[in-house]
Each structure stands twice: as C-alpha cells, then as structure tokens.
Length: 95
Image (cartoon, rainbow, N blue to C red; front, side, top):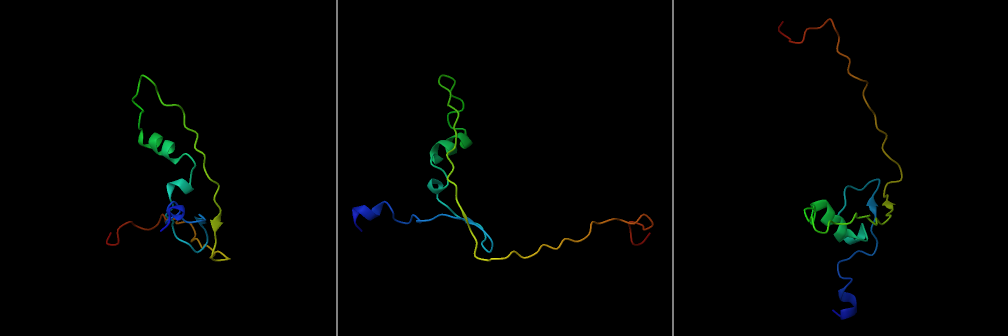
C-alpha cells in the first residue's frame, strides 16, 4: 500500500442518509460534521467545569447529506380507527 492511498483506506467516497427501502446507517463522524471533535467534547461535557477559562460556544458545521432511496414508492400506512370503549360493558369477563 502506498503512502498516497493510506489516508483514504476504508473511508467511503459518498455518504448518504438511508431513505426508502434502507434500514439504519453507520457513518464516520467526520462525514457528518466538519468540527466533530468540538461537538463531541461539548456533548460529553469536557471542560465544562473549568472556571478559569470557560469553553466558548460551539457552532456545529453540519454537512448537508442527501437521502438514498432504493424503492421508488412508499408502502401506504393503514391506521385502525380510534379505540372507543363502550359504557355498557363490564371490565371483567366474570362479573
């Protein structure tokens, strides 16, 4: 393996959010945000108790990713009617 390709090993060329027909995703933190290390430090509370020089406010630089759809149509969602209990029935079957 040459030195030029060592930095690109196991890094996908394109990153997409899962769309229709796909379930979940695993993505490298560097493909979701430009300042991922600062965002992660703020979420974990690293340096939050430093009273001498408090941390500055972090503004995440989120990458705008597209969705990847492999199914062209969505399956229609069928919802049942709302449950309405009847007042003339008893709650226990033996009463």
